Image (cartoon, rainbow, N blue to C red; front, side, top):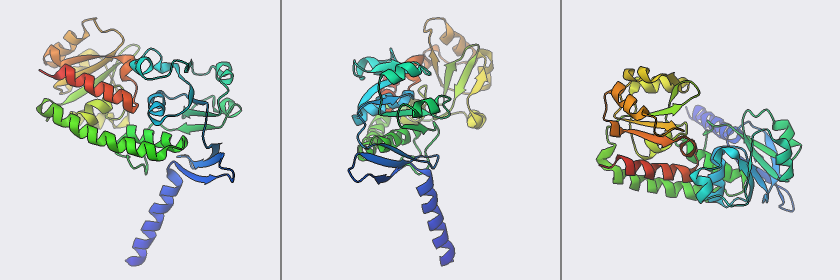
Length: 305
């Protein structure tokens, strides 16, 4: 039995070493760090990058929290509250695939999503780190995907301790927010609906578009059948399909706020129209910690009696 236990511990340690973002070495002069990514590849990156380009939407706000030296971010965040209230004025906004604009920024580190078809072109410009959206294995915040991403970015930017401290502080803040909403969300079910090109999509617990604020921070529940259906990803629906799901509140991410959609959803689902909360698509698609806090505070104000 003891031998089996030792083997299990060693196996867990080996998996942790292979599967998590972590530093694996530093050059003699301290200018270069080597990190292990979730893809079990070791990458050499600047120890203190001075011109970072972030091609994932969630990294823009998180890098700001961590004090990263950001030269450019994805244009997905352009025009959002995050960009207007948080990001530096000289930060460039990049369209995905605009390699010439990326080169012009002269980055010393590029962080992108996976898969990204331009990866090899990026690597010719600067060291490039890819991150899976769903990554959370062995993170100290693995049960909260958005905090796992903050932590992983901290590892990459050589600000791991700062990221862990921010995550711990946020968990305390989450407790305060949950006390504030109290009975407004207790045993109340919610559905997060996102506008698509020709239909709508119901999103799960860790999918951006306000889902982290709705389910994790504020403590709304989800229809059990719906949660099972969402295990394979977002569920595509028409408005008339919504009568098959149970919810007390519906949060709708849309670019058109005044088209009568809230009235139609309330009718189909048999709920009060005031419980259909229309949300700005671009602001709520972001899943960095700053945006999630903004989203949670906004939702609280809108569900208060």
